[in-house]
Image (cartoon, rainbow over all chains, first blue to last red):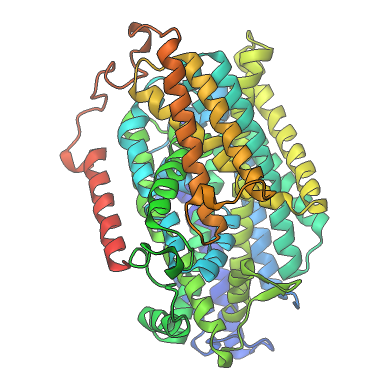
Length: 71
Length: 558
């Protein structure tokens, strides 16, 4: 039956965090070499790179752990 | 202020979010084939899914902006909303009330009133709740457009219509199931999108202790950094309230009134797969609720510390000479977040607004369909007709929310009235529920007229203070003026009036037999409904852990 083939919510959470975190991290790496005109407080510690990486890692873990699961 | 500019990557992140929630609505549509799928997400969710949705339904962007702003205004006392003002009620719901709600297989909270009392009490509460949810949904929409216009320079109409149409599509397609899915995604986006503000603020200032020390240095006589130690004298704390008001008004009536009777959150627990999961729903949610001050309260404290330091260059916006407290969170985003992260922060707020609206609309379509339409207008409606009505009422609910939003835009003071709406509806309802669930001889007429008396008295007290018909010190028993204290105390009096009228009328009106009330009233119902599970997985044990954490947090920040 169809209802037994639904992906769990954790799959979707993992996917969106992986995509968004990956985009933020890659953009942060780009800005490292091409600094923006807009300077923010603590920009020297590059929060976009490490926070994006944490987000992508968390999302990636959830995504790969649940990608074959159905509920 | 100059609008926060969004770069290309920020727009990409926002569009990813919109595409994602619409895609989820489309994906889940194929699994929504019955009314139970649409209104109760098929009753197959785990306690973790239902628990996160239970919390997220309450975690709107209005709350995030408002509570961070309130922390700037009132100090750490705002944490009471997350701790004593939520946790005991959530645990009480899981331990004592959920067995009656879940086991009676009702579709809504008004549905319980029908079983326990009668049809008129159910319809009264159903109508009050439906009106409340649509008003709140519309105000939510208006507030979203206001925030996006103020901070991002977005067009009002485009903001409101884009989010309303998105919500209408994904809730209309798959009902509560897609609302729950997007609420859980919103929960994670809020943590990833906003917790970084607290981390960066602490890094900039030095430590949490340093933030507290700086605030104490600026505020000599009024404490903004304690929870209880300055509560015996209302003039010594930022909220100007006595601990009695916090405990009775917030901790008891408002908190229990909201968390144990508001169908918007309880609907998520009804979607759980079994009774134990339903009982665990609010108990698991309590741990996440306790953690939220580490986003909103810490951000508010950072804003206070920065704004008192001229070298920081940080100050809140002013509108017509008044401080715009809600600007604290967006200004912190603009201060710390480079491009990419700005998109994430804005998406977290957007997700909060849209999930808040979707939550209200999904609760409205259920109460409308079951407690008004089927109960009064079409008692013989078939399952497929009710599913169709659920989808139509979703569209109607979104449309009415849009009308309310435009009404609020042309009449901004309606926002003030919304602040008090929960004390009009939920505070008296909690007295009705409490008496109904725990005392068998409370009668249908007692419940109905008690509820009417509580709602009317709460509304009258609000108008009387608003238009200075009476001095608010009569309600607050304090000479110091505080809107928050007045809200707390008004809720307490409304609850008391409802309880007294209910009991008095019940003494003299016809009671239902005990046999009719089995399964609906404690004392007439078999106590243990749960499947046997290890002690550490029992709701009572997990609730005890939650209570211990609550006590420890209160002692640490005493």
